[in-house]
Amino acid sequence: MKRGQDHITSPTEQDGYIKDMASAYFTATQERSYDSPNIIGKHDHYFMRDRDGNRAEITTLHTTIGIDHDMKDVIDPTEIQRLEDTRNLRLEREAARKDFHPDDPAQLQDSPHPLSDRRPSSSFPTPGDDPVYAAMRLRLPHDVSDDKVAQMAVEARHIGIHHERQLADVDIEGRQIVCTGVRPGTEITLSMDTAAPPKDESMALAQGLDQQAFQQAQAREMQQAQQMAMQQSGPVMSL
Image (cartoon, rainbow, N blue to C red; front, side, top):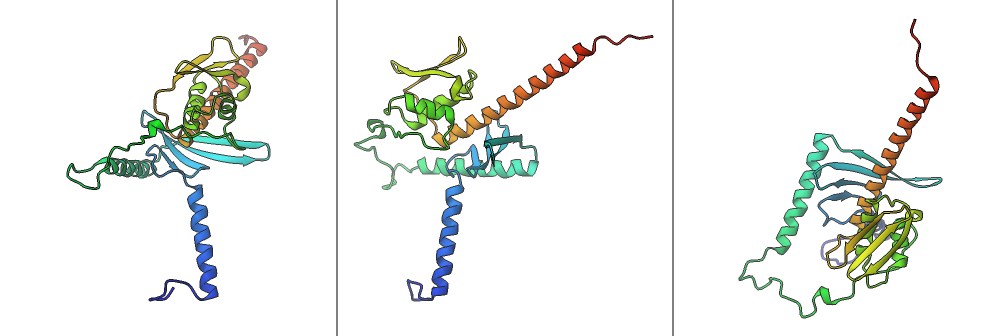
């Protein structure tokens, strides 16, 4: 683009401009929200920070039999510092968006139509959605937002529900969402009146909990196999 012109005339320049814009758009669609201080990265490769400050790197792997998630702890000091700097920057930006001088004419004013009066955002599940979330979304009414359903899907992990086949029922009782598992005695509730984190953030947390449960199950199976091998071998006789 030349000085004094507001359009591209050369076909070569036009082709390059379109390619650059397409590349920038594709890259942007792969990134997770820049507003979340605790989840940083792309949709298929990101870093998550838990409430204790520990960080994990999660990678989504597309295999011939489906989708797998690989999770490992972040221990590299340089990487941890980079993530912490990014988190602090996002927290500073969040605080700046809310910080207005009392005399600032551009400060936010109370809206006559607050968000609390609007219907929550909800939609039908789509291919690729978390199976537990999708099963709950189909059973809960649409005045329950997708964010709240995703939050319930995370809570279900805490009672051992990691697959839709482990879900017995989910329903509304008063102002509570009640989730029960197929295993007797597994039930958890979630208030409808509390704010829910964004769906993407909850789904990232759910993936991390699924990976932890998978690793724990593998460790138990290995321990049980070792115990059975020891029992089958019998006591070792000494001379």
